[in-house]
Amino acid sequence: FPHIQFFHGSMAFEQGDLRTAELEFKEYLKRSNTSPQRRRKSLELLMEIARRQDNPHLQRSYIRQVLQLAPDRPELYVKLGDTYTGEGKKSEALKAYMEALNFFPESEVLLLRASELLYENEAFFKLIDLLSSVRFLAMDPQLPLFLARSFVQVFDYESARSSLNRFILVQGSGIDVPEDLRFLLDEASESLSPPKGYQERLEEIQQREALFFRDLKGGSLSGEADTRESRERKKLGGFISRTDFSDLSFEEFLKMVQTLLEKGAFGKVVELL
Image (cartoon, helix red, strand yellow):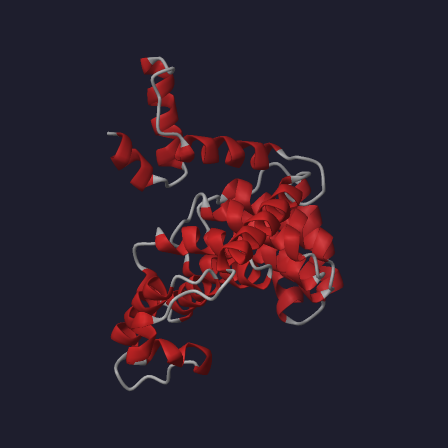
């Protein structure tokens, strides 16, 4: 009976016998007459076993298999990106987080992960574009701070003050403002103007950012073979970013709406209808 293998694997996992658990779950997944819920749980535990065994490549394989069964779980995309971060592959991690934000644009953890890497790579304009469009920016205090710091880097002090004030409004007047942003609270900052030669600095930032994203777009998401799941997500991302659907027939439009609903992109459907 296949369910016995599943329970043997679960018991072995609970007891810390990862090798036995791994063998039992793999054998269970080879069977055809299995429960979808137990298949997903087996993959999730295999994913955790791979993490504990410090095997990020195998962990990503299991994450993708779980995503095929449950594409509406943003935490799985976070884990996917985190496997790259753990290997020091920050560009691959950023690609994973940014791609996932096409489907979960207000995921707090995804926004934080992406913001950290964008700021680290001095992609200030992209970070401003990303966070300025978030409706619930106040859900984590670090997000408006990332936004304020990015505005400072491009010499937009008025917008930086606005982001900092949003942070203070949400956190309360007694909050300790980070030292590097305290100058924005001084009255003198209201008349602060960009330094001499700032336009050249802005051009330098824009050029470096353009080169960074050109390099980032090269290759597939992980440098591995393109999967059916990644192709479907790219297609969905194309639906979400489109604004003109005049080239679609009525049947194609309905099919697209159905796809968006199935993937949880309810905001886009409301926008279309």
